[in-house]
Length: 282
Image: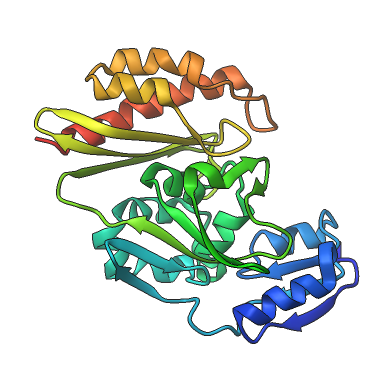
């Protein structure tokens, strides 16, 4: 299929993009990497009146360490992030997740900010943002603001972004020596959306783990923290953590698998990720 007709505008700056969004209202859509948007346009699941292209805006493709945070510009390509020494050293969970995202051709164009803003519940990067307790920087009609990951994801493809907002950067607490990270997912084929996935972080304190954050993807309408399992894992009881998933998760059936199988897979993933977190302590 071909997309429905739409107008096109190339934003000169973030402020220009916000202005264009305000002028065109709900019919406007932002174009970053376009790897999700192009598919929905071609299937006419999205029929915007205008696309506002962010690719000409300078400064949105930077990666830097600032004030104890790894700051990743919204327009950083996933392939560029995978080659970044800053991300490898200061945001290793992102580096662990990136090879699992689709295929090289997709990662060459797909952006970090685009994935976060689209908020596909089966995508890796939103779950990583949640597992790290990061935040997003947003510029809108009323200026700049930051939103914590725990408050950002609202429902299926729904976030804290308003109609006139532009996500400009992702900020992640820089890795410290005591931090531990884990990542695993299960899919039918490499590059497919995950049947279930888990991104995790924790702080090692001697023989125990503290500040455990387990962020699942592919099992709910948003990336979801399993808080009962977090508490059990912090207590050192992996079996109890797996049992806690019965209450933590209620995966819906979807076209890939039914909810009961997804819940079982969530337990398999938790055991794998727990081994990563605990094995790294020694």
